[in-house]
Image 1: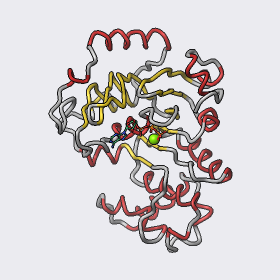
Image 2: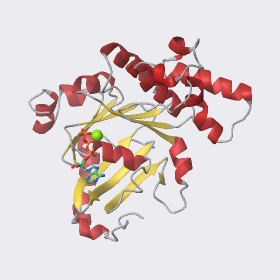
Image 3: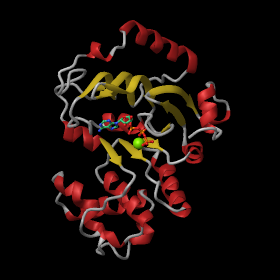
Image 4: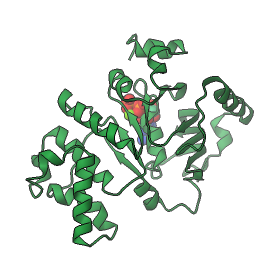
Amino acid sequence: MRGDTKSGKRNTELGIRNTESEERKTENVMMSGEMVLNPKIRIENVSYAYNGVLALKDITLDVPACAITVFLGPAGGGKTTLLRLINRLNDLVENTQMRGRILLDGQDIYAPEVDVPSLRRRVGMVFALPLPLPGTIRENVLYGPKLAGIKERTRLEEILVRSLQQAALWDEVKDRLDDPANRLSGGQQQRLCIARSLALEPEVLLLDEPTSGLDPISTAKVEESLYQLKRSYTIVLVPHSVQQAARVADYAAFFLMGELVEHQPGKALFTAPRDKRTEDYVTGRFG
Ligand SMILES: Nc1ncnc2c1ncn2[C@@H]1O[C@H](COP(=O)(O)OP(=O)(O)OP(=O)(O)O)[C@@H](O)[C@H]1O
Ligand SMILES: [Mg+2]
């Protein structure tokens, strides 16, 4: 499908010359040290257009395992689009064109032999607005595993406890697992949605502004659970503020109008940005 989706457009029509992107790629490696050995996810010269308008322009970026990578930047920069491409949520969006590759453990996730439901089990996604399913807390967490064919009660019980603990929700709900999920607070519902993703034991967790509607205490709890989770998961997070980005980022990538302006490990992007546009953004000069 790459570069040749519903509209039948070809890569070349996106107007990016190969030579240019190859040069940029080499430059990236040398300039920023951002390329890592055996990344969990490798985004390679990805350009993406909706109706012929580029939303992502030649993005090359490595996402290391067992760390939190944040995608930050002003509205419309392409952050959500890139997250959605990582678990192929945009497959059904009409009239889009993609070029470049996205590799998970070295394998092209857009290769024809890839089974999309299995990919989505490996790469979970949590959205800004938590949307629990109708039903109880228990049913919400166990919906995915049951659908995946797990029947044994003790195994399901293990998954339930582990997922809720990992999402830092267990203590608050352990005595009311059979209550309707919609009785939980917004912050609890958000963590329930994280627990629901974790129940499927994904390898990668994509979180798009997961705390945007939450109060500071619930936000702190979600962030605390992310610190625990990154020991064993690869996390990509679109933060709801620069402050949150600075708190949680092990790696930070700044997107502006479809361009990856800067990508740095640790807190460098916040304390010593290389690009004036990054500096303006992280110091609050525009947003
Ligand atoms: N389904 C769609 N159809 C057409 N254009 C789209 C679609 N989704 C996104 N876009 C466009 O792609 C660009 C990038 O949008 P995207 O949602 O990825 O940005 P974002 O960085 O996540 O922004 P925000 O911070 O507001 O969430 C925008 O110009 C947007 O209008
Ligand atoms: Mg977005």
